[in-house]
Amino acid sequence: MLLSAGCASAPPQGYYTKQGTQRAYQIDGKWYSPVDSSNGYEEDGIASWYGKDFHGKKTSNGETYNMYAMTAAHKTLPIGTYVRVILLDNGKETIVRINDRGPFVKGRIIDLSYKAASEIGIADSGTARVKIAALGDAVGDKLVARDYQHGNFMVQVGAFTIKPNATKLRDSLLQRYSNVSITTYDRGDTVFYRVRVGGAVSLKEAERLKGRLETEGVESPFVVAD
Image 1 (spheres, rainbow, N blue to C red):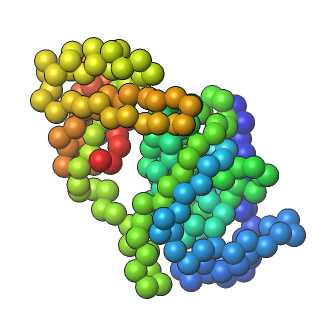
Image 2: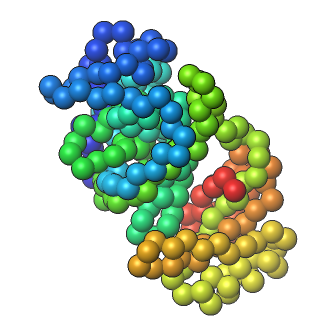
């Protein structure tokens, strides 16, 4: 397990204010300037995570860090941005909300909460190569994030490099669920066939669907926004 030193444990004075989270700040002699908009932001690099050593402490926007919440730290994205995190090894993904600054370790682009790291299976390895994509929309000087409590949600139950294996799982699930699909994810060198069960119109409903799949023996399902 690798606990990153990613978060800013002592942000500059005034950094906790709503406006202050967008001010330039200095860590270990280096200045960072948060961007005004997350619109179209994408980045590839190393993700890490932070857990119990920071649990209960203040994040950069003044919230109390909860290692079991779906949050993350980023050096420059606007606080409040929702970010899709895709594990490049297998296409597994999750969605987090940026509420902290970091990681301040060379080569790392995002620090996930323990729960978010567990969702994509990197809690044991500590780090992994990911792609991140901002999901919020900039309107003037405000960031308007998607409503993740309502919308279209699916539960991913598997990712395969051999399409017939994905088809076999889909056909098996179609015996119990009416909305099962296969989506493709092209990593560049490998194509993944991801099997997803859909039909949920709220995050709460999707979590119930995930729980049902787990009781049926599906290993490590996770919720994605469609």
